[in-house]
Amino acid sequence: LFKFARKPIGRRGAARSCPAMPVPWPKRASSIPLIENRGISIKQLRDLRTYIQRLYKTGMLRRKPGTDEEECLHWSTINMYDISDFIIKPVISHIEDKRRTGKRCSWVEFVTSQPEQQVPQFMISHAWTGYFQDFMAAIDGLAKDLGLAGQVCVWICTF
Image 1 (cartoon, rainbow, N blue to C red):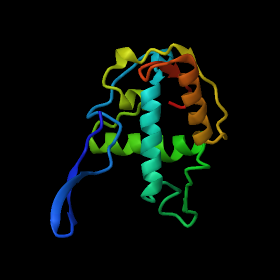
Image 2: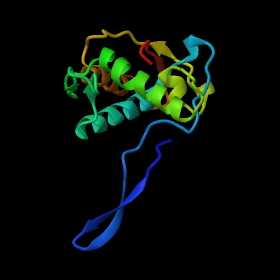
Image 3: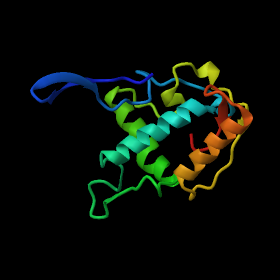
Image 4: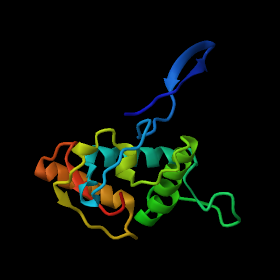
């Protein structure tokens, strides 16, 4: 599911390839007509976490970019509002505009290539102002405690 671009890196005069930052979405968004069937898998949540961490590490995780109020978002304090407003919506809009589809969809529809496998087993509620880092710790704990595989899908309103 991740796409890697190779770029040469020189080390002591020797060139080698190293993967660039992966993106957690396929070439085309899917369609899941029934909202209640738009579950996100534990693996997709973990992929999103990795993507957000990489955005943060590269300094690309910003609130209100290009304005006088621009500020860096910090991995430890990013919440669901930030994820929705500054990652999910802009990424989907930007990529679908580049694809010239004009499509707007949920994050689940955007990242899956197998929509029939996104049916959730249960719903998880959250506080929009809670830290995503804490939310993911709870997801990881739940998955461990219940022995849930990465393919298990849960319904979370944000995605």
